[in-house]
Image 1 (cartoon, one colour):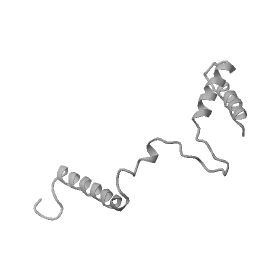
Image 2 (cartoon, one colour):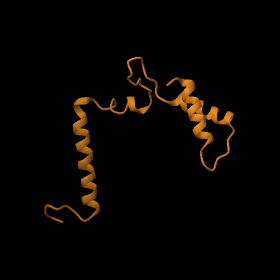
Image 3 (cartoon, helix red, strand yellow):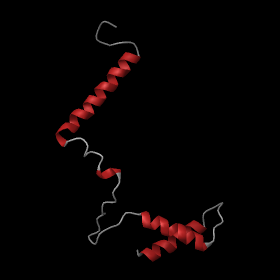
Image 4 (spheres, helix red, strand yellow):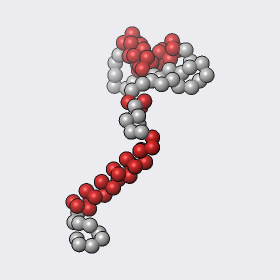
Length: 93
């Protein structure tokens, strides 16, 4: 679908929304803003990177340490829960 078609169809949907009264010109402006925010696709049909936090989510932690970081966090959470709810289940509590 071309960009123009997408804008027109989106604008028509915006105009037809219940409990809103927008002129078609304003709906087109909103549609253009929404269409511009959609991820772009290259000629092969795959989605290009749109940036943002997704690219950097795991780069902070090296690949060989990710497994240990997850289990360390789970262990810390379990320890906090045990302390908060009455001690350790393996004696002395």
